[in-house]
Image 1 (cartoon, rainbow, N blue to C red):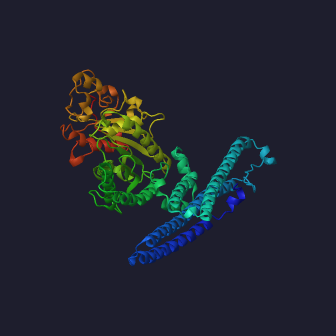
Image 2 (cartoon, rainbow, N blue to C red):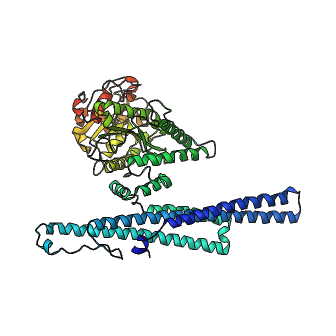
Length: 571
């Protein structure tokens, strides 16, 4: 059992030194292995030795080669295990010391066993009418500090038990010789890697911990501990809601070249799905290097942050012009149908920049991002006909925005959730989740419906739901499912639906509910250019200077001046 004194006075850095020693031993072993292998193989194979004795020598060489390889793997595993153990103990110790320091500052003595004492009031305090009101909160704070100390001890003890168990197994394998078997050593290395992640994770908030708890944990670490976690475990930080955006950017820039290397070295040819992700990672690299139009490279103004990156599903990416943790206004755009990683890094990131610029006088105080944190539906399947991907993505989007709330510095930012096309369905679903969406305003453009009958069903309130819908946009004029059945469009609804086609049974209905631009929906509709059926759906954000007032209106909403939008009556 790891007690208070043991953890308080521990020197985990010594484990790191031992890990370095095992690494050095492993390198020496590897060099010895190569020398033995090359020398003996020349003797066995270089002299044209044949016959049963040569075959026996070859088999013996293979066994020795396997043992030497296994011993190198075992030493490598020891170094990894000791280093991960040191990090786990350092994290637990940091929590303990931080709680002890806080208790000391608050006037709560901490005993040799880690108990936190809340001294009874003195003679003067007992007669102070204000003390009664202060006493209960002090006792509650003392109990909370005791819980934190106990939690740190429990983490250290769990890590100690797991590391000790694996060290015992490694030692037994070394004594029996089984530990240097090549296959056994490789299996044991997998166990060590799994335990390492578990050890580090044990000191972190639970996977389902709210973002504000994650943020409080991060803030409790010292700057040195934070930098060590960024360097050693960027994959665990880059997408964690509640981690500051600048830290996520730093972590994801470490992960990006690793993902590129991993996909480039997969067996060729890549599957279409993997090739699409590789193309996307490469596009992100180009964007961050400043090799794509509209910039984003080193020294760009505004800076471009990579605050989300992943290979799950079709790939994930969140890129933000400006730091949302310090901005006065924050815009998070969710793209729709056929969105890919490459598109997110290319045209969608350019769109986010135009939104920021459209905020006018508030542009310099605005962070504008593209959020591709879900698998957008593709035209090669039926996923676009259901709201399943929007519902799944809505939960992630909601957590993301809640994370931005927790990491924001100073007064809360004004947050605008923007959804385009199928992305508007996702935003609408997020705004209908229990507890509502962590946004102040919602903008829906080119929407096929959001699964609601009225804007008041969105948590921001009807007066904060804004809609842009071009009359020629076929997506925002999709017939309802009832109309699709009545007119015989059926599953082929995305094909022959010209603007206004098929609205007979439910004139105000769209594929995913009531028309957000309809007069009865209750949202605030702003002016956009009607365009043509072939380009109107892509013009809401001022692409190629098109879209009329659309981009300017979105910028006014994002910049906190919705009273200045040009209005249009609901249809």
